[in-house]
Structure formats: structure tokens, C-alpha cells
Image (cartoon, rainbow, N blue to C red; front, side):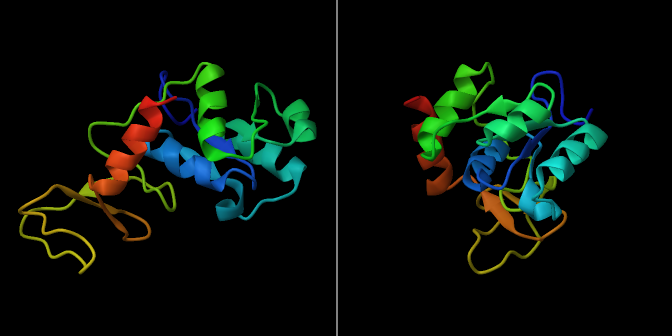
Length: 154
């Protein structure tokens, strides 16, 4: 199984894309079905089994098909986070980001001398990470603080 003992690898169905972004910020290997090109319930179950992932879904029928699936009932992302936590999962931000919020790939720390895009801070002034797959850059800015505040209010 990918993931670690504290955080199992997840596969989020097509209705939970925004939740996936939060979970990645908490260090979860949280693949999103649409990013993997699967929408059909049978394909989602097969992919989860092949990759050793736990399905997280709002679809009752899909939850019945997938072993140990996590069923989320709410449409609101904050309520979804609360339901996920209440299902026994840890929701704390990592000290350093490890997964891309956009594509779920691992991040690499940008060296201080490396250039960054105009939207990102200079890595010699602030820690910056780059996605190994899509190249997006991340840092612990105001978005990180907003997510931390959201999680603290659960």
C-alpha cells in the first residue's frame, strides 16, 4: 500500500476534488479520480484495489462496493473535513509540504540559488517547494495560514 501507517493512500471520487487539496496539505497521498481518468464506479474500485487506496466518496453505492470506503455526506468542504476527521483520520498540516495540491505528486525543496516563477517568493528568503510532475511551486504563505485556521476550527 502506498501512504504510511498514519495516513493511508486515498482515492477521492469525482465529487471531492477540493477536499483532496486539503488532504494533500495534511500529507495524504490523495489521488483524485478525474485526474486519473476514471469516473465509473467499477473503475474507481478497481484502481483503488490495484494501488492499495481507500476510496473516499459521497456516493453511497460506490461506498458499498469499495472495501473500507469512507462515505462523506456533506457538500461543504469544511463539513467534509469534519466528517473525515470524525471517521478517525488525522487532519494536521505538515511542517513542510510534501504533496502537490494540484496533482498529488511529491514535492522537492527548491535550492536558494534556483529561480522561481514570478508568483512565488525567492527561495533564498522563504522556503519554496516545486512539484516533481507539474512544476507548480508552493510555500507556506497566506493560503497555508487560512487552511491552518480552518483545520483548527474543526
